[in-house]
Image (cartoon, rainbow, N blue to C red; front, top):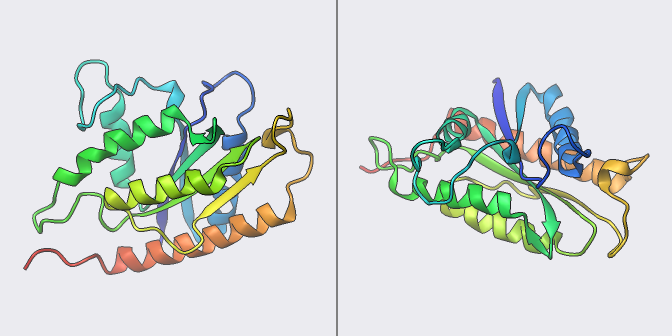
Length: 203
């Protein structure tokens, strides 16, 4: 069964500047899922005008409606973020806040429009906080209707207060590679099951 994935890169860097470590991690996940028949689109959120708010459309100039549609058209959502001050990036939080609208948007059977989609997480940084960030994402994504597979996070954290970024590594650590592979297997497996057998709706 062919699946599609949308990876949201919540780096603070716009395209065309310095390399994004988050983009490199998302590229590894894309490469791991591709042999399983998954086509992935990677979107850099900093390139878009995502207005603050908790609705699906905040008016003129808001780029969120088209990103929202891409999320709902995909079987898998991958949230990728750097760690800043021990937290997910402000860009990623803006995206999660906009997905809050899914709480009140339901289909004809009373299910959130996001139901049946699987979410995974990618985190990079030069300080501690990967578990904290993934915990925040897990809770938020579950709240707005996504299903989280087992071991659905891949991360790399460098030494605190050092300048080496994931994008600069000459060799990807084996532990990162094996974790990415596990994330890909579990996420694709669960997405395949849910695509074939959606959650029940209201009687």
